[in-house]
Structure formats: structure tokens, C-alpha cells
Length: 203
Image 1 (cartoon, rainbow, N blue to C red):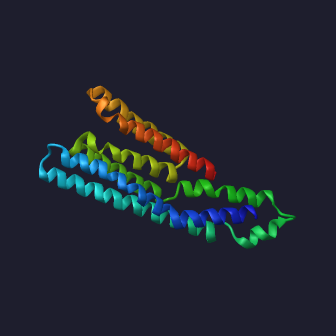
Image 2 (tube, rainbow, N blue to C red):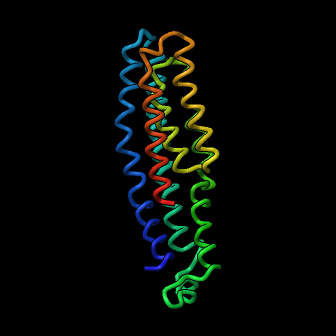
């Protein structure tokens, strides 16, 4: 099997299944929802934050679905052609030029043009939800980390992880209730490591 066909198969898998896997994880948004409704907040605030969390879930899935479909289509028809790969596949080896062209696909889909707008909107929603609902919504930070790890460049993903850990760890420590919300930092850290391992395995 050629390098080109391997990339095509990977694109098929990402395009067909990536957003479904992301959707499964949304069940964990039940925790910030439960926290909001158990806190002594006004009904108006509870309803607004609930709406923000639901909007977050919709945009999160929309981001994964549309971006993954774009990756799938680019790998299938966009950045290289089967003819060019097969013409260069002499004695089972892809020549250096085609190999280099295929290797550029990973940075292109890891920094898809649609990634940043989705990322900014997701971060904005979490920020507003945090201002209104308090520390209980910090469970949403794990989703920000996962989105960044799969759709942004390595530096951007690393920056996101650092900020997420700082917010979930340093903030509560300064406020004096880290013992109550330490699992937020643990969740963000574990999700960061897990998604990084998946990304490294694909690369």
C-alpha cells in the first residue's frame, strides 16, 4: 500500500468518524450542567448558562463535523491526485517530491481555515459561562483542549493546554478551594495527554 493510499484511508476515517467520537464525549457536559443547577444562582442565570452550554455543544460538534469533512475531502480530491502518486510509484517507492507534498497535508488539516473561528467562539462561550456561573463550568475546559489538540497547530494547542491547566489549577488554589475542584485540572491534564498521544500516533 502506498503512502498516498494510507493518507487517503486516514482521511476517510477522520471524515466519517471524528465528529461521532466528539459527540460521545459531550455526555460529560452533564457535570457543568449539574453544577449550575445545584448552585444558589437565580433561575435566569441558570437558564442562560444552560443555553450557553447547549450552544457550546452544538458548535463543538459542528466544528468537528465540518472541519473533519473538509479534511476528508481535501485528502480525497484536493491536495494531491491518485494519478500523480501512481505515476511516481516506481518499484513500490514514492519519489521525494510526492512524498514531501503528502507530508504537508498534516499541517494543512491540523490548522484548517475554519478551526480558529470555531475555537474563538468556543472560548468566548466558556468565558461568559464562567463569568455568570462560576467555577462549576470549568469542566468545559477539557473540550476546549481536545478541540485545540485536534484542529490547531502544535504551538496553539500547547498554549491552550497551558492556559487551561493554569485556570483550573492556579485559580482555585488562589481562591482556597482547590480541594473541591482539583479534578478539573486532573481532567484537563489527562485529556491533554490522551489527545496528544492520538495526534502523535496519526503523525
